[in-house]
Image 1 (cartoon, rainbow, N blue to C red):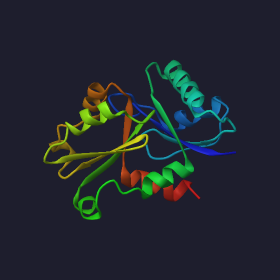
Image 2 (cartoon, rainbow, N blue to C red):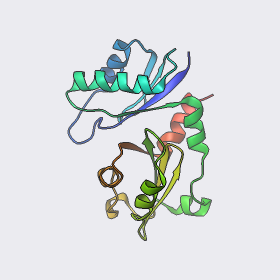
Image 3 (cartoon, rainbow, N blue to C red):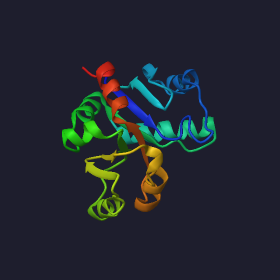
Length: 179
């Protein structure tokens, strides 16, 4: 059965605390196999024979909203997609090496040209962005706390949902869970 990685928004942030054991239990209740979690930020690895990722995302979101009492946007990626994201170089190597923060934002679908233009208008002397498929990359050349960019600002401006992870987390996931 193919493995997928679910990147969940609103897990263990903003007062929404969920233990990883409880999160695994929710995925097992949905009938998924080989359920594991990776760090406490809403990364769930599981196997499912289902073919339609969109339907799986909606099924997970509906179950978690009912169980937890709030919306949990879900972004699924295959093992191969996570490996490709970890390998992808959205900026030149010297900039990546020098930056304290490089995050990837997971989107449900690629953003259109108008949304990309809005995103690029958020660039500052310390923040830069790059879009590739269903992922948006954010490079911050200083501490994140010095940036005015945030997930909430991104979602409001572009009218899309997203969840962000550090690229180091994605590389660790790829190293552990992809062939």
